[in-house]
Amino acid sequence: MKIAAHLDTDVMARAAADAAAQILRDALQRQGRAAFVAATGASQFSFLKHLVAARGIAWERTTMFHLDEYIGFSAEHPASFRRYLRERLTSQVPIGTVCLVEGDAPDIGAELDRLNRAIAAVSIDVAFVGIGENGHLAFNDPPADFSVETPFIRVKLDEACRRQQFGEGWFKTLDDVPREAISMTVRQIMKAAHIICTVPEKRKAQAVKACLEGEVGPMCPASILRTHPSCRLFLDKDSISLLKPATLSA
Image (cartoon, rainbow, N blue to C red; front, side):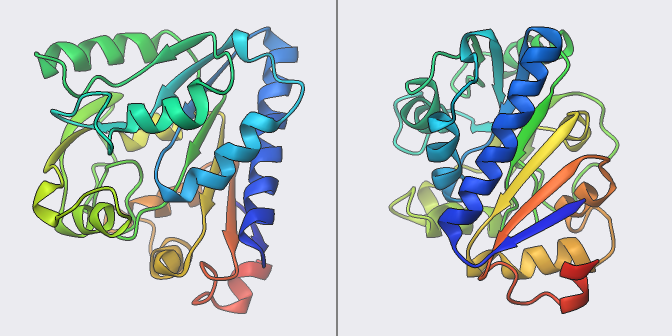
């Protein structure tokens, strides 16, 4: 894992977007197509703003998957991740193939089968991810399953995860936050050739510390990123605030 720390959050997001854009351009030049995984949430706002502004990406030759979606939510719900991506990504650039997680599908089992067949047919060049306040990766809350091979699964959201969604302002009350979602699994995320992880803000500082200085294991799901051969972690002055100096210089 390579760690890049920036004092300014927007500079951090731009650096992450520049790295992501270069990975996409390289993949497109090398193989004619590129496939990527997009994340959502507050940590991705500035990153996506800079990514869609990047030049030289033949978006029409890309395929996009995304990490997760609440079960039972339509694509028009204010907290839907499909709506988030439409507003910030898919309406901004002409992505060739968009494979969205339909959380309101009438048969969740059939929807999982559809997603799993679709992603099994491609190799993911890069995954864009964040880290949750509880250390989660996608909606793989602790203790996460590091062994399941299925690309997408149905998961229950723990209390800390639900409180984060409420705290970020997506819901009027904690009771409004769903208790289940469809999530990409840890092993599927780790299959991406490259990972760009963007983690700003003070509220993520404890999770960043656990990820980088604690044990690699299911109780801090994002710690698994340390084992990926090509993961770049982008942090700001607030998210690095609890780290030991030696961690950043390693």
